[in-house]
Length: 193
Image (tube, rainbow, N blue to C red):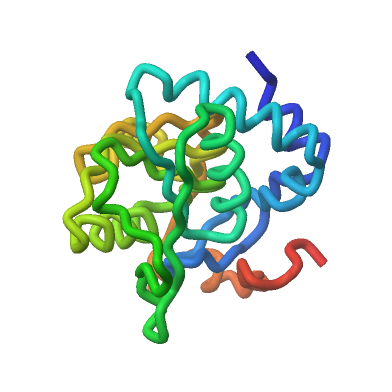
């Protein structure tokens, strides 16, 4: 078993401050998995660990939707030796298959992402897959931040994360950090600079 928290800390991936999440919510913690995934040896180790934990689900395909999710999702699929497919964002920023990949060919899809910060992005992926009639059996991630007591399920699907990190996540209109005037970092910008 790998020490994922040590790897994330060693690569400077765990960040504290005031962050805009992909969902539009704000958080006091963010994990920039790209800082870790740039090292192929860590990606290989992490992918192997997630693949090992997913064996009991017997997935027949891995699906991801974010750029970092695609990196780790591909590595997990490679370790299990099953197909890998991915969703892209359409012009309205909704996840969809705008290419020739077809999720309906598979019966045991597992969503693999680098980070689950709140359930909004994962929920959108689940809805997109269900819109195609795809069968999803679980969700896995490198790390999950937020309300850890809810960490085991999203939309009724079991979530397996290598690391759970407690964090405060706010609606942007009720964000205490905004009220205090803290600088907001966008998830698309280099964090902490």
